[in-house]
Image (cartoon, rainbow, N blue to C red; front, side, top):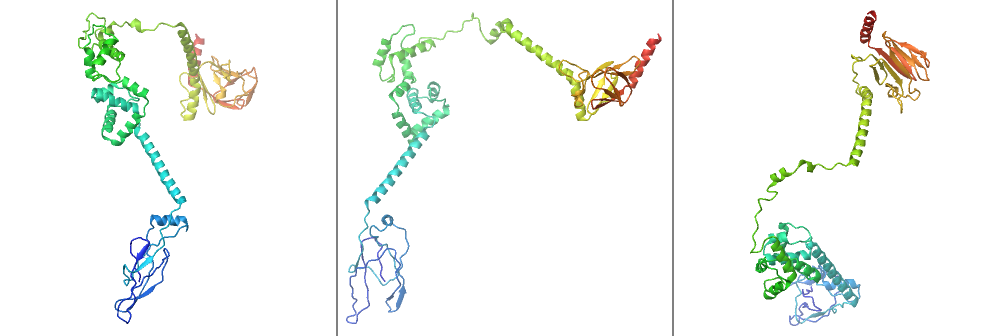
Length: 471
């Protein structure tokens, strides 16, 4: 058996142990140069063990992952020689020695094309990594702009109070006090966010930096120095310029004499200078508290002045609304008939005011006056009984007929239309009259009705008529 060492080298030393010769019982060694093809299966070999028995074993290579140089060589497709892989055998009869060696092929070369491909891959990875870091930078900024971070840092340096910064600094959007505190702690203790914010602030344009510094808050030391100027004096720009020149360590670097003058005037206006006092409210003033102000308001002042054009338009709208209400009131009785038909709730046939009823298949018409008109309602024509609610009435005249109660208690129907009216099968031509009895069938243009008479009320009317005629 041949045993190869685990070190990867071009020349491998091994011991060739043969059988002892008969001349001196001394083992004989010799050097051999062997070349092994990569990853090839070897045939089984037989060897002698120490006790003289034959032992059969296999020299098949053990599978293992490839090294980097082997991957390069496999990608070349045979352009360079393939190095021999490390092989382990099970034959214990071989051992390494310095006398025997095996010459292996030289280390494979890497061509220029492969190097270019590897370098291009690494450069593309670096480019992707750079784009990813740029995306992280943009994502981490969030709502906080570089100008906001700069204003926050300057404000804290000037006032040492986050509450004052929250009230006095104007950011790009409205941040809460908690968000400002969280951002300040992130700038202090988070190295990633701090590095990103510093880089973004360095990239700001000088004009943007100057605009943020101009709006910086005033510290207490600055306001104390401004308070040394009396409120009754009339300082000039030269006065504030002298203050800037004499106290450069107190005033912020972006302060100008004009900015100091503006801030001093604001302090004077709101009575914030040390030599000023807030004047008390005068008791003789017109307004003391809310209740007194409410009492002084006159009701006449609350009323708006009249507008003739508006009043005219409101009057027109009111008249139109009233007209629509009257039309709806006129249609209530007709719609009530339809509701009764749909719901199936039929009220009693007669009441104390109903003289007769003209009942159809769908609707009922109540006769509560001594004379009613029948017909089809249209524009400019009003009838008491609209027959179109019962069914198709396009053959019915606008004023088809009149039902009239005489003093004797008899009902007569007169035909005023073009088509005949049938009463109990008898035709009534235009201009003719016929008496209606109780339960008479009235047919007008294929619409049939039953005429029912309130006999109790008609009898009362007849008695009263007889009494009047007897006197």
